[in-house]
Length: 101
Length: 458
Image 1 (cartoon, rainbow over the protein chains, first blue to last red):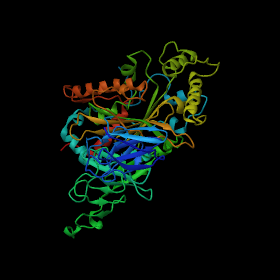
Image 2: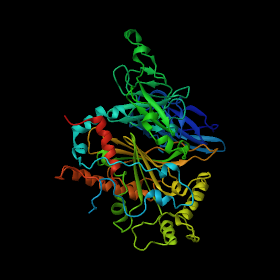
Image 3: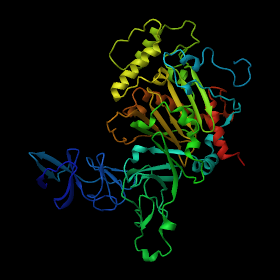
Image 4: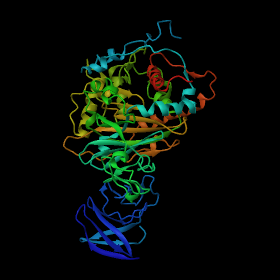
């Protein structure tokens, strides 16, 4: 298991980090932090420029939406969920972990 | 059996719907007092119109590409780049909001090799429409803006290969599309609807619940299940005597029909009419959904008026609105309008539904039913975003869908009838459905309009 500590993000901010060799998108959505692998499971583009609304991130390439909490995709373009990472927050510090969550 | 009268002139014994609502203390909208019925014949409707693949194919070719259809609500595409895919048969449209906040709709196919740009039923957000096959890119305005390796396509340009636009227009917060560029304007297609809905602020409602269910029946028979209240006594009231609602059935040119039936009024056929207190107690028990004791009906006041005040107050508090101007009929009654070919809307306060039906493109025995609950938006408060639809398969009960309340079981009862009809259509030796002249006139109107597009069999 690999962990990464980083400062908590301001609301609606996002940041790309590396955890256990994987590119991870961390974002603060409405005060809740999420961390998902920064790679669309449809055609493998990075997700960090995608728009986030209603708890979903839309891939900037073809628009596939992923639930930031579960990683599950919407629609038929891909059936493969995003890998998600656990996020805990304590005293303004986030701990991102690649343990199964 | 019915006594011999000129066909279509017979009515249920006792008062009419219009006479019933004139007893309310508040004056109903003029449209409610209107009665627009005409006898449309009494021939059977052939079962082949439901079961024949040839007939379904002719509907796909001659009907669906030429009629206005509700694709989504405006709030589905609230911001630039939001999009919603609307599929009808094998046709598919992308409805989107451009940077200038204009609503546009395009054929959902890349102009390169025809790849669908978005999956069926998809919705989401994008900055442009990018084909997942070779990466041709179209702006939100539909213009072809990038062709990878364009050196190989000297014969391609924005003038010839931008996305094909589809007619799009809005009414009451709904976005309608029409694949026929020569079609009449939406406003013309809507007929009396804008006038009849002027007392309801439907555009200012939001989607609270959205259920999409696959139904085991042809799309027309699915719609028919909601076009008459004749089935209420047997299907929803176990055949209980005097459970027939007092109903008006109306047909308007060319594409609109409606029924309205009373809630909480006396069935005029009862030999011993209930007291107003008994009527209120019955409504309170069935729909009260609160712990308060049933109020006493004051002398000279009807149960309907008492209950309507309770509903207006309760819903007003729940949705932060003042509904005091709603009449008793607007508040309580089941008010259902139909826009041919596949859209129903209930503008009343208590029953806030909208329905959309679509055929299964490959099997006339199945269809899809989108069921929406629309609630009044609270002034000054941003309504919640449209919910993801709750998907139900043929065997799934509506009671699995959170938000439908007691209506979940009611819709299950309707669906059971649909499956039984599909089986019966194929074994019934008679060859067609027999319809009541008055109570089932909306079904005849539906088929009349379908025939206008599909034409007679060759």
